Every structure is written in C-alpha cells, then in structure tokens.
Length: 64
Image 1 (cartoon, rainbow, N blue to C red):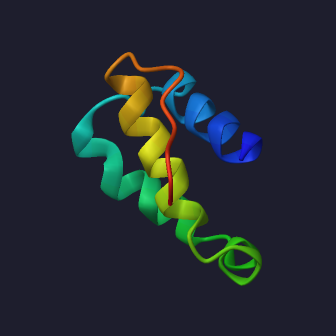
Image 2: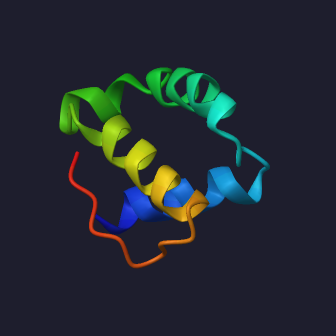
C-alpha cells in the first residue's frame, strides 16, 4: 500500500530511524482511530516498511 510506504518514509525523514523509535511510531499511529477502523493492520504495515527501509531494502515486499 503506497500510503503506508509514504508514512514510513516520512517517519524516517523526521528522524525516527532507530529501532528504539518503534514505540513512538506505534503511539503516533495509534492516535488516529480512523486508521484502525479502515485497516486494522495499517500500523503493522507502516512498521514493517520502516524496518525494511532502515535495513536499506527499499524494494522489500511487506505484509501487515
């Protein structure tokens, strides 16, 4: 999903580039209840893309 990829890239651009930042990212994504209503796995998808991008795998296929 392109939106999840973009969100992960924005998190990286804003400096959330360490594994220790995952709790903060999860908290921020949790503040948008509409995301959970529309797609309950969206936060996991963003987190998966974020982990892949941190590892330098920009073309990784992520399932959430």
